[in-house]
Length: 261
Image 1 (tube, rainbow, N blue to C red):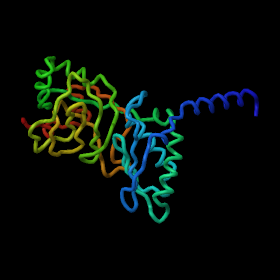
Image 2 (image 1 turned 135 degrees about the vertical axis):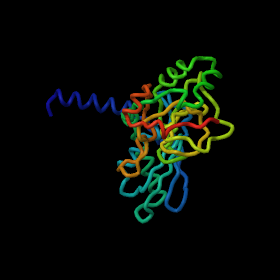
Image 3 (image 1 turned 60 degrees about the vertical axis):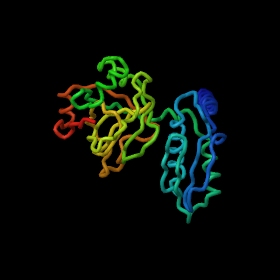
Image 4 (image 1 turned 45 degrees about the vertical axis):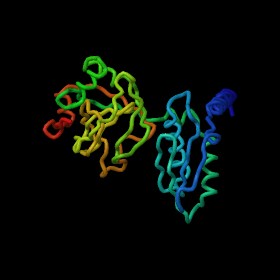
């Protein structure tokens, strides 16, 4: 091997080693059924970001290396449900293999998260709670919109409904509790806030989050190979668009009107 190539190979190996997080020291597994394990991440804080990013990185590594025995991985904030084929592996041996892979998670795995920018038509006519959030925070509606767009959010969990992504964390200035009485019908694409999280309703459903706008992007399509646009650990930015842009991107206002609460 030429000296220059050997030098860069050694430097790269050392850098990779230094970036290893060794999550094996921070995980535990418990039996969650005859063909399932639940994994807990015991690391309370993570200096580089959100702990859900570590769960997401480990989930991707398990899916990549154990696809022959694992049938499903469901990551959440600090835990992960792992279903497996009991005819191919047992709880104990799978737990050992998970710990071995967890020891190999690096910063490169964490930083490989997908980044998505989602357009939002922020307006009181489609954001039934936008004015109230502004009043409670004692700021203008324009400031609420600016503050909501400012962070890069992390997908911390998927749940409630197919493709419904819990995004954190909302700026403390616009943190707003859930509605006392949930709406019976929230439109598809509604962008909303509840406590320190924000989300987009992938389809029409009941809901108790505070609605501030509408997103024309399809977040869940069961007819595609990857039905959910977002996965745990992905990064999300919001970008304000006007009414005309919303329509040009496929939004249909007559189907998106929000009922008062």
